[in-house]
Image (cartoon, rainbow, N blue to C red; front, top):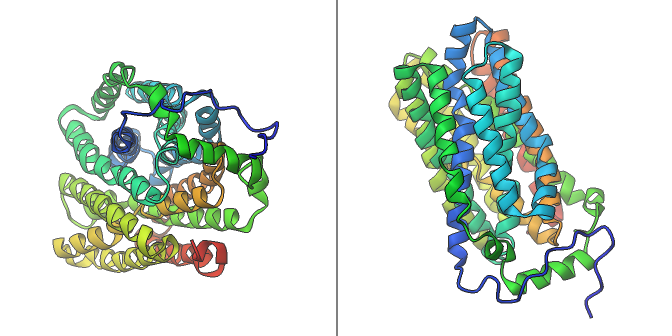
Length: 420
């Protein structure tokens, strides 16, 4: 007999066993993909606003970068709240709340004239919106529909990170060049606002139900396993994954936020630099699907190590772009670094779902994502600060490589992770 859930376990709304019948699992992947693509694209678009804001207000690179760093702080620190809202109120209310916050933030940024106003609009408003459309909510939702192929499903959704960059970053650059950065924020905010009515038509009750057999399995895991309450905080795998999330994010965000300015300083045209950013995002989309497929076959930890090695090799190619202005090296960087960029998050999420599971998975993923958010915030600020301190990018590229080396260590030394 399955034990009764503990008192601190949230009660999921009772749903009939056939609530999800007639709704194919791939449609949930498609829905999560579109929402995540929007969130990631809006988040990454700040890379092309960085120089216009610096020129418009005369702030140094570190100050402007701190706005994006603040967004990433919200991304990390807001993740537990997002997980709680998902578990308590369901995906519909969470996504609507997040899109509303993103719209308010983007439209407010168009009027901002002081650094603190950008903190409120972009760091808090857009940051919270992006958090609701990110890894925590989608991983928790997909875990209700997939088990054996969960890493592949999360990877497909997470590759929207690259697709969002590929579509929205060049679009934002085009809007800035033709309309100015203020109107660019207006158009981005209006585009997100136009999606809200469509989201209301989605059959959220059936989507939130998941597959009946997985729902029953989660109830058992919650009652019996370390997924209940806060027991996961006392386990070695949780902290190993948190450290890996943190170091990976420091390296990735420190480098990627400075990629467009680095290429412009190296002699590339602004639109070409933004396209190179988008190209790395496209390679990311392809790499995440391929690596997610590989993870379900040779193991998630082994595949994560392969992706780190690929990213480090890509940094090696990027270091020489400044002297050569070679598009071949840019393509090599985009392929090697981009294919591994973001692929670790789906694997970490799948490992967490495998080890912990339960009806509180949203809260667990939210807690785990604090490492990702704080690391991303640190990296975003550090990238701009290192440029201001050194006047170049070589030190940043070397630090990024060291962070990715360190990110591999938990997968290699923690047995529960390596065996997953």
